[in-house]
Structure formats: structure tokens, C-alpha cells
Image (cartoon, rainbow, N blue to C red; front, side):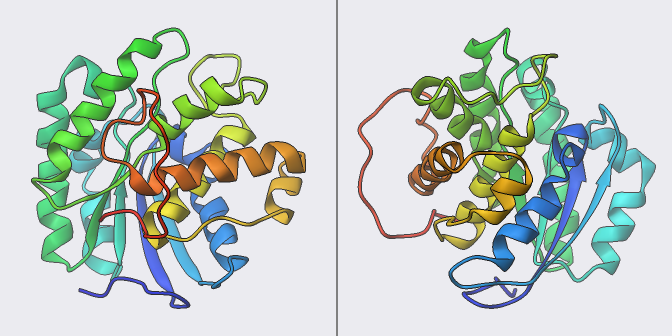
Length: 238
């Protein structure tokens, strides 16, 4: 299986719902990769439906066709945001369905670890555990957006990540997600002004989000509990 290396192109399919489509997360990631220290051209596509679970996508059949026909390097699975809290076993079953299909077509499964609702921060650990528990079984890359989100809420509460509904991401939230994806998939620090500015983020806020995303390279399922950051120059474990 081809895993993108420094300076190479990559093909990434996103399967999910509004946490993926809001502010066009796949395009933000592609734009960050294009201006990185070691630029990459990402071909990104998405199959999204509002509020959709992975099982709904599976039953519709379009996602399997896209996986089979796309010659992807990575396929990103974004579950309906509260399902890992309500029924982690169902979530695990959904991931297993897709992971088998993804492996059969020589791509790598990526699990988009999302954030808790603003009104229920205590559920972040449940979401994180549900994702990390299945990741090893299916040999998936975990992209710990939700964990990094919690770090920003603690350390930079002036940056608004949630929209008024307490669920969906603001442009800052989606920018953070794109930064975490870039670090998790390519092991490279985000250094960007232009894309953040296009989202009306000031440079100070952008720098804080970039720094928070770089911490995720050492993610081992424990970031929601404040710990001392360990220096490292290695990319995030796949």
C-alpha cells in the first residue's frame, strides 16, 4: 500500500456529515498541504449527508462504490457525533464494515475523532475511548481533533470553536480540525497565514491553533487530561 511521503500527492476520501462539510474541511486540508514546508497536492472528495451515521452511508451504498473506484490512499470515517457515546458497539460495527472494504482496496482507514457537545464536555473521554478501542483492531490512523479541541478550550478559551448550537465548528474549529489532520497524516507542523486569514482568523489565534495541533503528534488517548507536553520531532504514530 502506498502511504504518502514528503512532497508526494495523495488521494483522500471523506465519509461523514456536517462535521466534515461545514467550512469544507477536506478543502481546508488540501489548501494547508499545498502551502506546507514540503508541499503536497491532495485530491480530496467527500460523501456527506446531514446528521448521517456511518451505517446510513453503508446502507446507501454510494460510499462503497467510491472506495472501490477511487484508488485512495486514505479513507476518513466520521461517525454521527453522539453515536460513540450512546452506543460504542454500534460504532465499532460500523467501522469494521468500512475498514474491511477499505483494506480490500489497498487504502488506509482514518478515524476522525470528533469533539463533545459544548453542553456535555464530560463525554469527550467516552468518544475518545470508543475511537481508540477500535483503531488498533482495524489498524487505523486516529486524527484526535476532539482531544485537541479540548486543549484549546482549556488553554485559549478566547478562541471560539463552537457555533451557537454548541455542536458545529466555527471557521476556527474547522481550521483546527484541518491542522490536526495535516499533522496526523503527514507528521509535519502547520505553518500558515493565508488560509487562516481567508477564514478571518487573526495571526495570533492561528498560531495558537497550529501549536495545539502539533501537540497531537504524540496522541496516545490521554490528551483530554492535562499533562506535560513531551518534546518530540517524530510524526504521529500510525
